[in-house]
Length: 158
Image 1 (cartoon, rainbow, N blue to C red):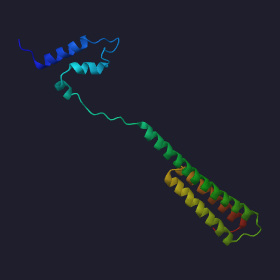
Image 2 (image 1 turned 90 degrees about the vertical axis):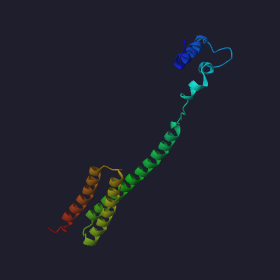
Image 3 (image 1 turned 120 degrees about the vertical axis):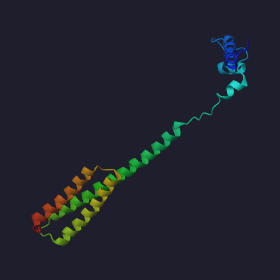
């Protein structure tokens, strides 16, 4: 009787497996896959061949570490700038509060400092360094200082 190509291939594989032992590699020093491949006809291996790519995640990890380090430093710089500018506003407001006479030009200097601090806060909120509510709270705090100063010095016009 005539045998089909599939049956012939299956028999070749069965013969290949029957001569193998799982205890140790064959005497020729071939590994399991190579010894099986020696018994399989080249036609059968054509459909199985494929190209595999191995992506090393280490490069990604290193790049991400460097990026996060620079982002963290940049965010720290922005937060520090906000703190410094707000401190200048509060110190100026305290100095003006301690003065006997306070004019609109003195308040104008304070407003300039407040506008610079507000700009820094808005930039940080836009970049995602600060939450929107945190930025609003800080700006409100500075304007509250200015309004209290105006009220105390009698410069608040209703």
